Structure formats: structure tokens, C-alpha cells
Image 1 (cartoon, rainbow, N blue to C red):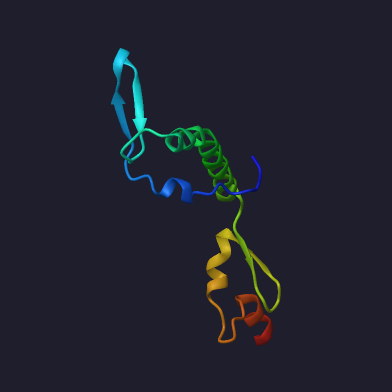
Image 2 (image 1 turned 180 degrees about the vertical axis):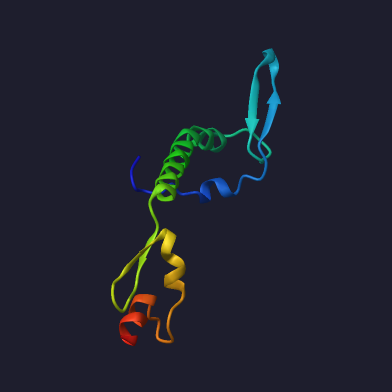
Length: 106
């Protein structure tokens, strides 16, 4: 899938999807308007692309969740890994991290 985003505005106007039984035991769909139309068919034809994009987004989210979290201090560039982020939160009055404060007190 490319990095291009799918224009979701085309789906926003759909208020309710209806499935109707038609002659011969078949089914048809309606996407919230008074008649079945080419526009309905075109929207449904785009669903595989929409689902593929959703799947790609879920995969990206999963990758981000597995990536270790770290943050660095703006002053000394010390990198705090996820388990030590609480130390980063104990900042000094000018945004210094614990390492900066310790070095300044020496």
C-alpha cells in the first residue's frame, strides 16, 4: 500500500447501510439514499482498498507499540529508556533532568 491516504470524506455521508432481499433470493445493498445507484456501487467497490488501508494502519500501530519508548533531555542529551522515564519527569526548574541536576550539584 502506498503512503497516499484514502479520502475518507466519500464515506462520511453514509448514514446507514441497508441489505435488501430482492427477487430470486439475492440480496442488494443501499447506502442511505432513496435508490440503488452507480455511486452506491462505486463506494462498495472501494471497500477492499479501505480495508487494506485499515490493515496497514493497524500494522503500523502494532510496530509503534513494540518499539521501545525513550526520550532525551534537551539540556544534556541523556537518553532515558522506558523504565527510567520517571527520572526524566523529576525535572528541575529549567527543564533539567536528574542527570543535569546531579552534575550541577557536584
